[in-house]
Length: 271
Image 1 (tube, rainbow, N blue to C red):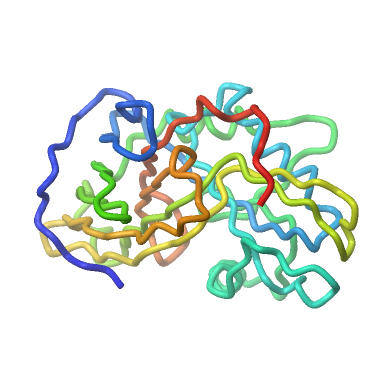
Image 2: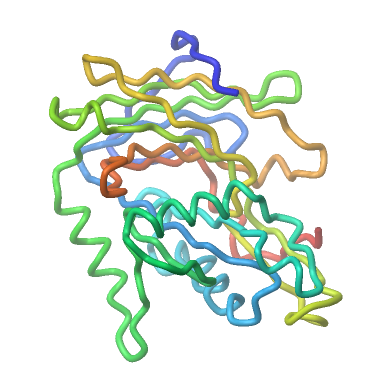
């Protein structure tokens, strides 16, 4: 449940989308003059064609696409659970989010792995990877929203506060602000299904999503939410992302993450 709060935590404005300090448990961040895209991956441990795309997503920070350049989120869906392996990260509402994307784009099917770049289906090229070019195109555009985030642990919860401000009055009625809590460095030894016998590793795995937060008549959405922490989650690998999205076409007006990617690429802990 979303709780509207006044901004009670200090917010540090920084030129780039950079979280300080480097821990995901306690950080502040603010968007700058560059528009940052959102990349969503819809995936499942029950899908034998998903692991290569999972690895591609995990490798993005090492290729220069950290959270300051592109906000990545992996949504594990539940519609492959019936074939023998229940994905421990899958949620029904993530499947519903993917169905909403399909409906918005007039697609009759949903599938995995699916990449969605700023609200639109993105297909990786077989011989030429144009992802860097796509990101650069978004960076060259003026941001259409400004975001601020502060994240602080309090009594077994992550308290998130901040705001989103829309720059274009015409977009205010259609804009929604979302929050996502995600975890890096996850791994599972799969014992059944299409990936039986494989060890699957994941990053940017969405644990919870909260929203939407509508903007008021002045184009401002106050961010106030408490994520209750599951004791099984590795708090040092958690991050919080915020993004503002146009509900008409899915276009992401701005995205921001409070996260540390320093641990990415090291050994993942089995879960």
